[in-house]
Image (cartoon, rainbow, N blue to C red; front, side):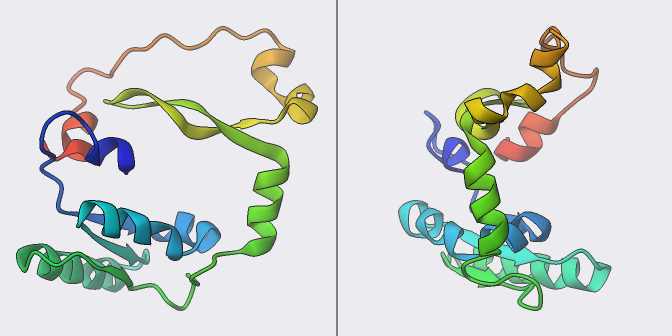
Length: 149
């Protein structure tokens, strides 16, 4: 999110529909710095059609009124601090690493890689697998959709 909003040009993004499945783990509080720093709306939504529609309606209203706010529209599953047990496991096993994002290229420290003591479980290292070639599927507009272009 930070990479999208801190690009060279003025971003065309005025809000984010935040993923419920990710937010269940990381919590809702992690989005507040994005709201505060960039003045955008962040709405966490669920996966049922009615939940998605409600979250999109909330995000649309916030964006139309130029309101920067964090709204957890999936409170039955997402808590402010997230799942502390899962977060502790993630911290133990993974560390931040560069990641390739479709339509955006590599963004430093935007993904997770296995810590050194767990790298024996990394199939790409264990089987000496080559890094896949960077090639966007024909007609892919993921980068444009994500960046609001």
